[in-house]
Image 1 (cartoon, rainbow, N blue to C red):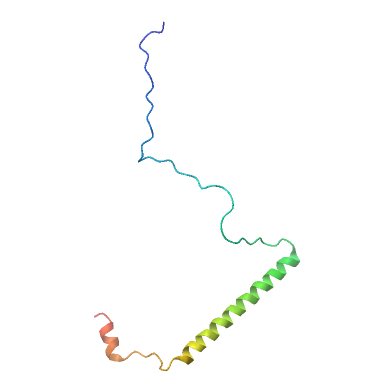
Image 2: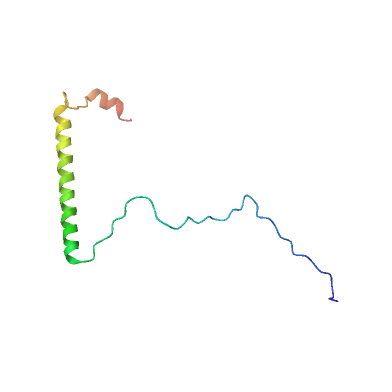
Length: 89
């Protein structure tokens, strides 16, 4: 017979305020993924393609800004009276 009294260990149910951090499920993520090329020939072609895309996007943007400014009937100007009231004293 053991000496002393036997104490049961108290187990507590996890409270709702203390929740374990849930890990996100492993697997595929949404969206397209681009794999970087490893061979020199493919790296060069990818660099060229990126430069072409960049130049096309910049030209399209310039063209759109020109169209927008040409289509406006009046140029945007700020009069002196509205500038004084808009500026904080």
